[in-house]
Length: 301
Length: 149
Image (cartoon, rainbow over all chains, first blue to last red; front, top):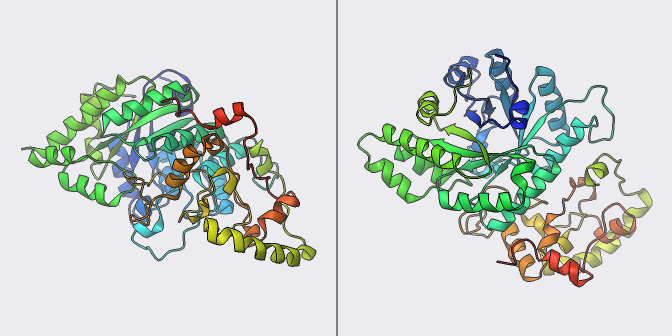
């Protein structure tokens, strides 16, 4: 079977499954390999987070290089918190040279919510300007205007938070991201399906689902405690109390966690405009194969 | 197009201009700091943000809110405050200026921090502001995709 890249899959009409890998808080590359094995064959591409929740972790590009060795297509996440435009361009050139062709452009959590709140945040560009910058690089130019001898060809992605207020402003920002050059959009984890459905209807109305592939976030958690931590500490996630209660009261929380994720995936697949999902197994990577199989998603290899 | 303007060399202030800029900035500060809590970025986009200074955002977002706004529109960094962009959106709707929020603001030229935004417009270092939406048609479009609801 000829392997398709994520770019080709987005251009086809396949249902896309992305995963998310947390690089370790140490220099142990084997931890990346161990996590990656849980995803291999079950996802089309794997995100490597960039110092998520503003805590120091192994660089997303280095982790992506390890993923390439493992035969998994990486999507590097790039946040605007830690680098200015010079560093971002040079990192992107380096990533392209290593064979990374997908980049998810994010603004990034503010450093004050992380474990080193005294750090200086950069925020030289914001995510929309970063998307435009990568698009400029794809056209063969650096931001200085200098023409490159060899242009990278990144598939550009952006984030979206369908649950943030005000609702309409979220759609405006989504439109701006897609206009700037985003080809795929990964959303925050979906818990509240009714809000997500309403958001998706508007996305379809505005015709945005035809201009970029919308990949809905699905979170898999093994305990109510993790959900509570997410709710309290991770900005932009909307977790309703009913989910926490459901996990808390379950006799087998792990089983319940799987069925919650599977139910969400099945519901998402029936929503018009959703081109794929983005699975985020928080501290529970080993569950990915089970969820993919139970949700009846095609196994890629 | 805005992407193209990003790859054009950006002029900075000439040596003869510094004094004039300081003078104008003095006048500008008297008006804009108390009225709009102006952060003196030198590339004023107040006219497109319903006259609320977006640079009060801890991340200095120029293109809309980040993904971290709380359920009631609170700021990720200061949960007791409203997100600047939440306030901008609410007021834009009231003033029928939502359409202006669709325009993409290019990366900030940090050389222009604490220089006169007025002078920067006159010298064509930044784009001119859009104070008014001239005709009725434009005003209707500016009311955004949602006012029909």
